Amino acid sequence: MMVLPPEPTPTLQQLLAFYLEAGVDCALGDAPINRLEEPEPEPVPAPAAPRPSVALNPLRPPPMLSVPRSEITVAPDAAIASAREAARTAPTLEALRTLMENFDGCALKHTATRLVFADGNPQARVMFVGEAPGRDEDIEGLPFVGRSGKLLDRMIAAIGLDRSKAYIANVIPWRPPGNRTPTPQETQVCLPFIQRHIELVNPDVLVTLGNPSTQALLSTREGIMRTRGKWIDYDTGTRTIRAVATFHPAYLLRSPSYKRLSWQDLRAIAKVLQVAGA
Image (cartoon, rainbow, N blue to C red; front, side, top):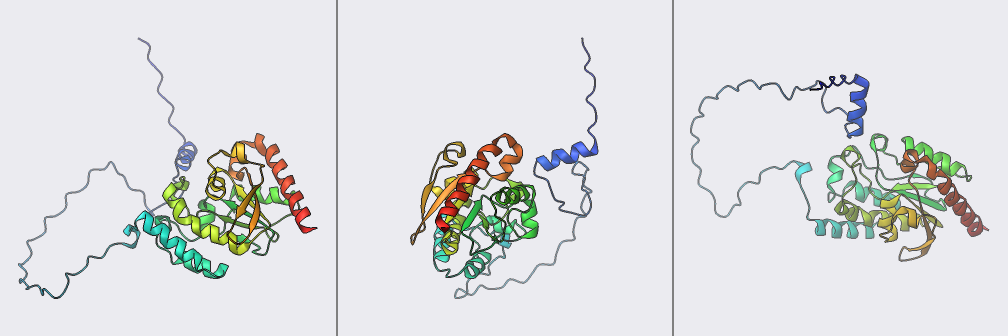
């Protein structure tokens, strides 16, 4: 019988890499907790003295139990309807941001550090929209500031743009826990806000970054390989904007061979902006 050699013990660096890949990227306490340790028996409390009975007043409702804010949930249809109504009434970007900060219909708000609204120039002629914030964005409160954000900066710099000449936002303004994929319900709840966001910015060109934002905003079920580089009319209700999809910078970091196609999309965007500004 062949005896297999024992597997090598992982190094601390390998363990940290494993946890980071699994989405564990922040500490929840100052001291580690041994979940396998036997808990100490709790002391048995002395019996409490009986409390005097109090007659209930039939005209007064019973006291309400307090529920943690993070556990308060809103029915999906009600949350979507509330988001639509709130977004519709926002006359400015500042008002829209305030409404989103006070909106409680999306559970992601209660697990994120802060709202990630937008970055760049709201008067810019081109607007880029991604899917959702990551860890770095959640910390700084700005979209695309991590590794993918630095790549996006290099991408737009290649066609003569920077954050003073572009506007950047996400479909989802709160970071999903562990950078998980937002659920369809979370996307639908947040969709009215980004739609109103686009309407208020009113760019000449809308660029969706990656498959989720493309499917949410351009109403398509096709994958990014089929939709990228194709110009589509995006109707805000008051104006038709030229829209195009391209790869998300995070995808290009994992699959750099597709940068060539992304460069083709960027050149097409620059050409449309040049023609529209002529």
